[in-house]
Length: 264
Figure 1 (spheres, rainbow, N blue to C red):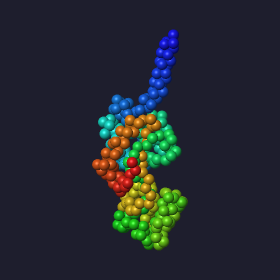
Figure 2 (figure 1 turned 120 degrees about the vertical axis):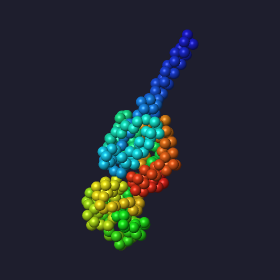
Figure 3 (figure 1 turned 120 degrees about the horizontal axis):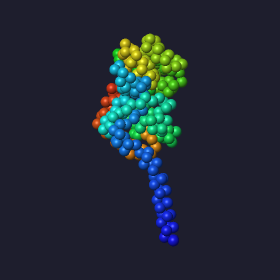
């Protein structure tokens, strides 16, 4: 009788262990991705130069290229799912997508609900200007005019680092700031890479380009909590792409500057 009770308890204990282990196994997406031969990748479709529709009406950008690389290295089809800033994490948590590849920054609040890969691309605020104008350092801003949105990170950095002879024209929003630069009210523009890319794309006659870095904050790929195998595999792909120069090529092509130092 005692043996039967012990056997029953042992069976119940083993069953409980299986139940506890099941969610972790079920939440590991890599096996499922490889089996169905496709991966759902959350990317932006209206956020150049990271994810946007090109002239051929196909998604392009540094995020899209990186997402496609991951699919290629896994040997599966890339299914691009357009996401926005508010819905990208809920889409990941509800399994509408397998990965977030959408200019995602890492912070303590987000780390509570999702995991992050190593970084793959820079996200930055910078000074932009016409190709004919040489700007290599803050000292080169002396005597120039620049448009910036009031109260932004780039405004704060310019106040701290720029020479006193830089004439700064402050505006209340990004669209007005960009318009001042495009209409040549100023020689230079201080803004985020995405804002600048959209403006340059719409106004090629300005022939503007990246000039001077103000602040750098890298992008990471978002992975569901518990998807350890997928996380490790994507990290392996990204580290190899960093080592062989692929990520550097994407950055130069879409952002007009190198990756810089990407944290692992």
